[in-house]
Length: 187
Image 1 (cartoon, rainbow, N blue to C red):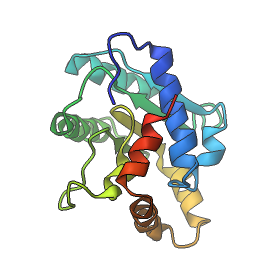
Image 2 (image 1 turned 60 degrees about the vertical axis):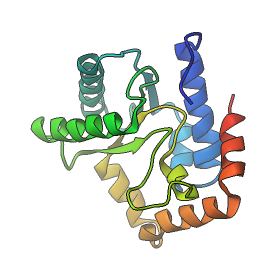
Image 3 (image 1 turned 120 degrees about the horizontal axis):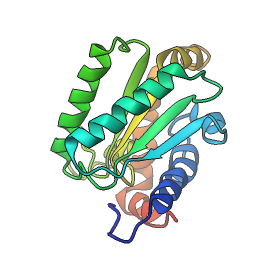
Image 4 (image 1 turned 45 degrees about the vertical axis):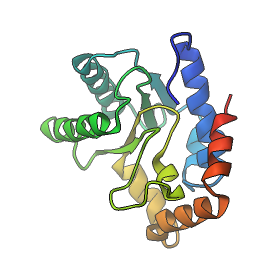
């Protein structure tokens, strides 16, 4: 669900945070999210840009900020891009470029990117699969994750490789109609 011309940056931020609280944490899709979502170390940045080069500039600024900041100040960043990259294929192309930029600046293995999009679709999965909603969000998002932090939490979690399958099963039981209604009800 993309914002209309009347959506403000505050409304986009509020919707992303509501999605995190009610969907990601509420359904326990990411068992590591709760402490970060409820902390000041979660950074949500709403990118107003509509042009590719401007989005890239915001991406690079956020990448620089997270790598220069301590984990206690910026544990993780969600970059929301509500006014561009609406086409899923265009978004995937941007993610591919972002991964290349990460490597070019020497942060591959330090920061990893997770991708979320309103039209996210896993290759090879039926279009109507509820499993796509594990990576669907109200707006195109790029999640900057600290690999060291992820390694630490994954080492303490039993069977972390089962998380994606467990999430898909949970969402399939809920069904697409229920999930879509839940997402529509976000403030």
